[in-house]
Amino acid sequence: MAISRDEVLHVARLARLALTDDEVERLTAELGQILEAVGVVSELDLSEVAPTSHPLDLVNVWAEDVPHAPLPLEDALANAPEAEAELFRVPAWRR
Amino acid sequence: MAPVVDTLRLTAEDAQGLLERKEVSPAELRAAYLEAISERDGELHCFLRTTDKVAEQGVPVALKDVISTKGVETTAGSRILSGYVPVFDATVAARVKGAGLALLGKTNTDEFAMGSSTENSAFGPSRNPWDPTRVPGGSGGGSAAAVSAGLAPWALGSDTGGSIKQPSALCGNVGLRPTYGTVSRYGIVAFASSLDQIGPVAKTVRDVALLYSIVAGRDPADSTTAELPEPVRLPTADSLDGVRIGVPTELNEAEGIEPGVREAVRRALELSEQLGAVVEECSLPRSVRYGLPCYYLIAPAEASSNLARYDGVRYGPRAEGSSYQETVDRTRDEGFGDEPKRRIMLGTYALSAGYYDAFYGQAQKVRTLIIEEHREALARFDVLACPTSPTVAFPIGERAADPLAMYASDLLTIPSCLAGLPGLSIPCGLSEGLPVGLQLIGPQFGENRVFEVAHALEQALAFDTVPERLR
Image (cartoon, rainbow over all chains, first blue to last red; front, side):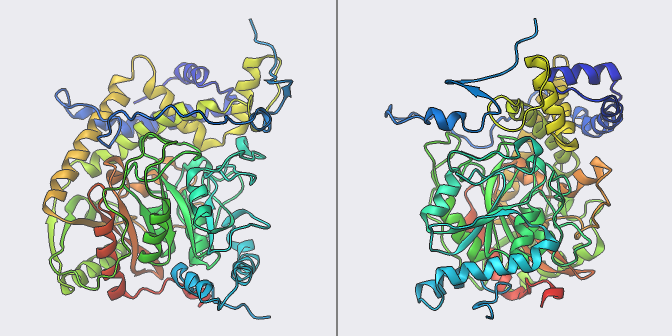
């Protein structure tokens, strides 16, 4: 199953990856091959089969509402590339 | 001064005994492993970093670098997490510390646990202690190689489609991927959340069971965990009387299984019969043809979602751009290596409008079939047996440029992972001088039975886990 260069660029935008031209070229070929290999799942008629999203038969779990200390602010910001006051700092949103 | 113990042979259980009887001090034991690391890890590159001083006084342990360790850098083998120092412990890290185990260091992994050779680590590959020109398997090659080379008595890994079992097979030791939901993932760097599991690697089945008993059990911080229906028991069996072993034809005769691997597994099954087991063929008709494709839709789809969090805003290095958007896009392109990018792209595509039903939705239905056929087989048998890996350890570089060839390394480990079942790999012989792993698959929460079967076989096989070149 072939995937076009435009589709790769579209998916890269969705995935927030600024791919280089070389990467776009290589991924166009590789994703085509991989999609062809995984595409065999389409040969099965599964219209009557339910999908599995989780392999255990767990039902919802309720927890007691016990207050506990949250992560201290300084810890939460400790790994930030840039922080200011109580906030993560980022460049301005491009309008 | 000669080391007080032979770390190549010492089991964790025996190490614990030495400490309890005060024949060895915690400091001496730790020093012996650190010395082995300084002696052999320059070549093998199992560890990304070792820890200086720890408070715990028990048996040392190594943790795969996807497990958050408070105050100790945790990178998941990725540049995008280089310099990241967790501010809390993963539940499994807290549990091993709570049991007194002393952290030796963090072991190498394919980037975000995506790979079957550790060649995808941003910090360089690990090497196989049996033959350093070959891979140790992956993604948990660092943990498995460390155990085989006597650099750690035991270690924890993570397994999404075979990342514990396959490296254990290739390095000649014992690795358990537990039942999905039995071990907390709180604080684990997530790859594919409906598949990720944490589990132990060690030299013996009993050590694996012991470490599993320390980390298993429900965790209030991870709502996908379940209570164990019964406590973990250390196995003692030396007979297989009354044990029914199913041998799925498709998993034992798949294309690509090396003759030497097939032969070693066949001998182990014969030995099982001599030990009293009933060994019969069975069938998992869809697991091989559709397992790998199903996995390579589900896992990348979930990965593309999990890896969306790496944006250079809250942690990790940032590539500066003129806007927020450019900063995020450039940080991700520079921070992720080729394999995570490939999987993010594949997963995003499989989840995108117009393709969701045909790819991700269809794969989720295939998964249901694979679960059902395993359930049917395990209604007739106590365990299922097959090779863990189709091949022995392959040369570094051999599959690095061919994603599909690399993905095929997990052909036989993936089906039971999709089904959420426990799988244990034990060494069952050599082929071309390299270890072969036997995979034993049990029913959900069937770890105790799997341990008993594996222990009886292990005693009879008497495989020497020390790599020949290090004896």
